[in-house]
Image 1 (cartoon, rainbow, N blue to C red):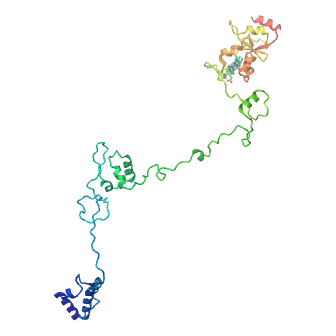
Image 2 (cartoon, rainbow, N blue to C red):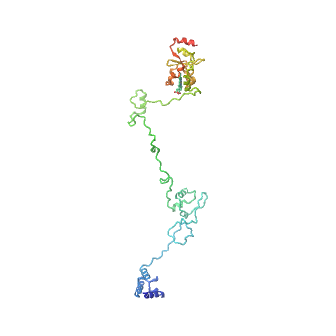
Length: 358
Ligand code: HEM
């Protein structure tokens, strides 16, 4: 029905509706607006039109609250004073993407006077928190106001340094003893059965007294052992006089180690004759070992203990000295080619033979 609508529009156009209809934001009360709406409805205008319904809803709403004039917060952002000036900002906003006008410059020089102010700290959020916190920890190196930072910024998170367990550092390695299956076992007790309880042997002094007194008793302790090996008295043999050289020489059939006329039988050597063969005055050195007399003169340069030690037994019975030093040495085999004869009692016929030798 276009006619009533045209009338309504015509009223609006002529300004009549401004007064009567609640289209404008008049200062009338809600009751006047409601009356105007009723009047429009009585004129046959559709009450459910968009404009009319919006006006009715607006009229039913309470007046809007007054606009609160907010006081701008102190600007702690990094934006310069020329940026977004005049805009209302209620929350401090850090503009990391905007190049700050006062970017702090870090210098290692001690005379750096570029002390970053309060606004510089949040303007450069640390891209690398670890490095930044490390710089803050160093403090005087960069000349930054660390004190101001600590008062305005929350404490920095712990840097992912190597000391933290969550860092990239490898986990602590177990001890080699726990890893190695071939690890040496703990030193065991020298006792035969270490599971047995140790007997109560009393104080150490008492043990020593009992052991030294010969009474001994029932001590399970091991007997004292001579673990200290005496120093070797071997000498440096001259070339060609090794034990192997001696073995080769003594086993040779062409060697005459007795230093006696060829085909001389074994002699009967009396102690007096043995004493005469002491290796002095151009004589050979004889010694008696096990009742046999050996000419040890050819063996002197081959003796590992040296010539001096060997010649200590020259012209006499050498059993005592030999047995004190190396009773394990098989002299019978070593000196077989040096055998002169047998040691006999004094007054035996062998004396005459010695006289003949002289
Ligand atoms: C008479 C016959 C002797 C023979 C055949 C003989 C032979 C030997 C041999 C084979 C060794 C080497 C032993 C080894 O390597 O274990 C040796 C070492 C030695 N001998 Fe004789 N020896 C004789 C007499 C003597 C005598 C009478 C003395 C001393 C009084 C003596 C003093 C030594 C000494 C000090 C060593 C070095 C031991 C060492 O430090 O290892 N030897 N002798």
